[in-house]
Length: 459
Image (cartoon, rainbow, N blue to C red; front, side, top):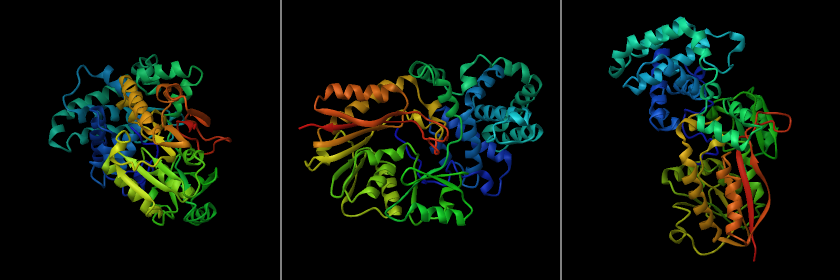
């Protein structure tokens, strides 16, 4: 999976809060969110599941489901304690988990609540969760079960929560294998990494300096009452996340949504006008656009997924960056004979597929979709892509390995193995492993988890 940028392709952005629209009935929102969560529990991504939600329900369903995914370890643990057997309906099973999380918020001390938690009274929540089962024919027979489970939780809350104190998944809201992997890789930082992953991410932008200046964007935002903090050369982080398409300059292509960590990629290649450049795993196009904003390049953007390449084209069009020197190809990086003209590239950006473990703040369902067994085949695919691309690098040219992961198998260990296989590859200075962090004095945007390794080809 390679989703290192969040770009506004649908109106179900993580930054669209349900209060930006007239609020639908809570029961309808609960049912819609439960269907999306149930889809995640059967292996579908939350982004895809939310696309199937009715448009008027999508913002509220997304808000509820994103919150749930960040606390789903606790939800699963409570379901295990309260249910003798799993209901045959995945939507009802998900509705119980979601409702238990929200009921726990309702019954908790307001001073100790997560500031991002949806808040309802316990009475309203139980009533609307029960009502949600009456919304569709396939859930009608589960009214009594939902009512009984939520009432029992109200009565036995303290005792039930005490049983979760030694449950790592319930405590840190990540799968046990994920927790153990971080404990092994980062014995000093694993708790911080897990806690940071459950915090809502900042909305971070990269100003398109070919279209405008950062100062002009700041002035437009200020005129609209939007506060933003600058960082780096072209970055802005909004003090309060907002619906993307409503921000000044969106239609004009003044900026893109891109995490602070991802904004480091393009400058590392030291691009100059006229260079031949390959973005080998381009979709959705954030880094492609950044490279074109930095220099007038002869750029080939490649991605194996035709639909995702459509996203790249849309984003480049919005930013005014498409021209005759930009070629978009839907093909595999490992099938160069089908698309390569035989001329080596001066620079290749390889944002290779990974578990996306560094961006779980933005995609909280990732942790529940991944398995420990994913690491080995993903690392193998990365290795094959890198080896294929290396033969396309011109003498003196550069290859930049990028992942939005924090697992060493996909990051530093991958880079070390590449160096051993290719003795003509000289490793150059690069940031290496960036761990997810909260905003602070050194990093006001609070970047996601990324890894960078830069290589130059000798001779």
